[in-house]
Image 1 (tube, helix red, strand yellow):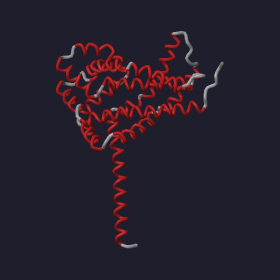
Image 2 (cartoon, one colour; image 1 turned 135 degrees about the vertical axis):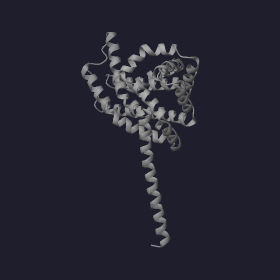
Image 3 (cartoon, helix red, strand yellow; image 1 turned 90 degrees about the vertical axis):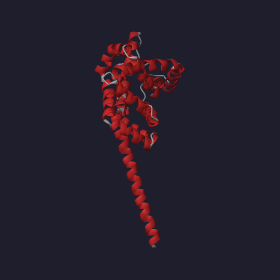
Length: 283
């Protein structure tokens, strides 16, 4: 083989090796990013939210003297949700979508903030706020903290809500999760078109998006008042300035998109499993 060809092949092999190493490094950085940002924990909560939504629907049906599904059907649906929305599956899926949706430069900049002492502190506060005891505590304390905000601190939280597009973001996640819950319930309900049911609830909720977005934007100020209650004004200002950077905004957008895609893929897996063995019509 001519030396020039051998040299070209050697260079090509080295480039391929470097490219593979870069891809693997990128994947590892993305996982580190999702862990440090709290997305790792947030996506794992989808399974609990799905089952909780189904349980709440059953409770409301019982209160209205309606029989939504019997215990056996509920158990079947819950088991399918446990498999389709298993935390390890969702985390792997979300990591792959984040790698696709977020550019390397933005990843590096956001990871730098998340790795800082202050960035880690804010993430800990956000993760802790998701604990059930903290959520219950927030119900009574958050409104009081919101009412007691100084004008300067309120302005910081308003900027944060704007940077994170809190109203629309929460509305989107609420609509998508509710649609997934209705889809799951419809899958085990005899003579029901699951796709039609999910699309109908989505259509109705989308029509109410402006009101939902306004409500959630206002609610965000109350949430921030509680979650960041132990942070100083200077620390909050530093966090807000980071959230307002182009890289942070793109990261936030990529995170929401990745969560949506992960939820959609899990819902599709749920549909494939339950449609493969449809429930018998008891009538």
